[in-house]
Amino acid sequence: MQVLCKPSDKSPDVSCPVCNKGFLLYWERSSKIQQLATLPEIRQALREHHEAPGFISHPDADFNIPSWSGLPQFSAAALLGGAML
Image (cartoon, rainbow, N blue to C red):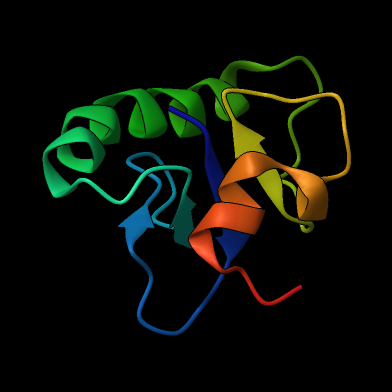
């Protein structure tokens, strides 16, 4: 399932398990069961940002998990999740 992550300091849906930076999540699917099942994958992807060579910080711009080559505002997660871009 695709998820759009938007950096946020206010009421984040998930925080990075390494640095505690917060993100709002916009989901491709609305099933709470599927969303809960995907949270470990999201946390792992955030953890992996810290393992990347030359890591400075998480992206300041929106990004998708799993990664997607298109513009974040046109991802299925953004369009179906109602992200305000």
